[in-house]
Image 1 (cartoon, rainbow, N blue to C red):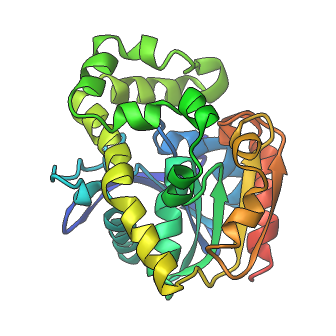
Image 2: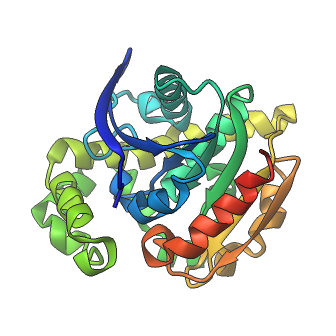
Length: 288
């Protein structure tokens, strides 16, 4: 994975970001989900690098990127703060404009980036995600049953104790057969690091404490994402079964939305990288 890519640490005013980048052409920023690191994108990055400059960071609070400072409202772990940090990263790498792709928790940061940095983001792709406010307002018994971790992770202290008591048992679905030995080793290091576990959980606490307020403010002001937006979801995951048509929901938040399901379980970048890369390539190619 990541053939010909460079692995680096880039310092921005708020901290250091671990990032892998390579390829040539228009820049595309790939943002991973929980509890992954940038390594989840390895196969997709290789498939895109012949046409795009591909940038894969560890999200703030994840992997080996900086851990945001604690605050009562988790503002430093907000998607607003992370979006600003990653826009700064891209600028330091020489990309004042770029496309952004986000999966799972990464889709929340990608959405906030497209909403608040419209001069930078040319096209947005979200995978298996909706704005936080939509998740919370649409929560029902199915959400509570299947996505209970959103609310458990938002509690103080106890989630850290539960996970760190036996990280590999908590994240029992992790598999080197699925993600590859190098990515598996990387994520094992992350989930056994108390600072990283805390940083990942603060991402959820920010969702409950402050991110939904930013979403609500946008909705009340009538603000929308103006760049072309592609909504993708994994057909063997539960986003569509819980919420209905994700495209219809995203049309409440963006002016130009299309989308479709990709045959895969939740971790589509690992389970079906060829189909995902083709979807990304086709959509981004329309804007060249």
